[in-house]
Length: 119
Image (cartoon, rainbow, N blue to C red; front, side, top):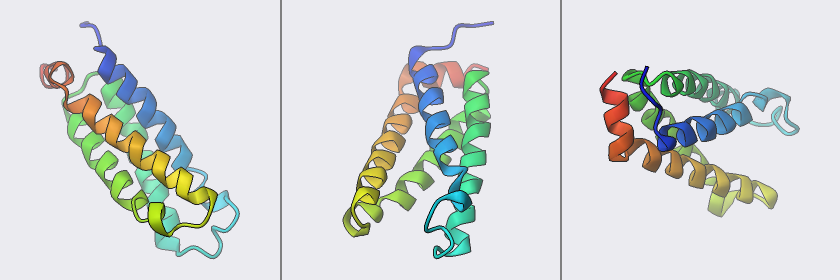
């Protein structure tokens, strides 16, 4: 078994945190007024993110693409919240965008790509 590079480990931990944050969507206050598509798409992204975490942790080749796709979708879905969301939701949106961008950067680094494509 080969060693997992630090950027892959960091990306897996960040992806786990951001994916777990999406799961309680229907239980959050205000979710009853949000469109069902928005609430449940967050759950789908959360579950897909957790699957990507498992793949990253095990250094599976497919996890590279899944991680990038989920991170881009997280980034794109949170970006409108930065200028348009009320109050504290702006901060949550900004953190989500920044963490998603950091995950993408960590996974596309050469050391990460070598470890994930050599599997």
